[in-house]
Image (cartoon, rainbow, N blue to C red; front, top):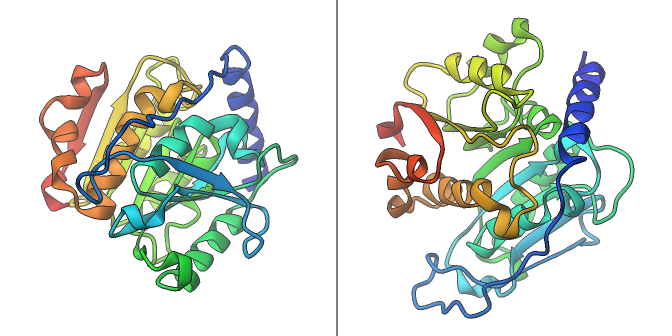
Length: 280
């Protein structure tokens, strides 16, 4: 079942991005850091020898942020190259003070697995608070992914170390697994979909409807299809929405809440629904 699921989402993702032109990411190098944890800053990404097979994205100067939460990321098509598929998007998250641990390496070949995402969580917990990682907050970890990578995030649904989920252009493939998958999630979960033309639209909307009562959830649809805007400068509209989501639920930055509760997302073209956001 898992192999079939990965194959279906991989094919869908590859078709979606085949017509998408990658654009160069331009850093906002003029941004000043007057207030820690709030301003956008420069970022970097690389492979750390202590976590082979993964790419770390984080603020260039980790000291710019008092507390740096973690997002573990699975790529579209469960592909092993996070930079080629989602580079500008992941860089945008890092620029706002988030440590992104993505499965795969720059230019990597082959595929990834849910176990790689679990290994990223293990690494974050083991290294947080030590040496260069003194400001890493492993008590706030989100599992997130796009398309096939979203199913890798779902595979972490019983890990108590995960405090939020981000499902991007994805959803459970088998309706028979929807209730069991979503029933195990009792932390905030937001869905970012590409509208009715997104091959994952019905899956994601079905999953949103199945979220447990009382669990904070939000679903946004932007009419861009399955490929999203990940390769646009700064990750486009998906990057803007995602960084505000993670800053809100992982860092507790309530100034970002209005994007989801007071019309900010709708102003950017998202069609939204939400439940129990007051529980965040």
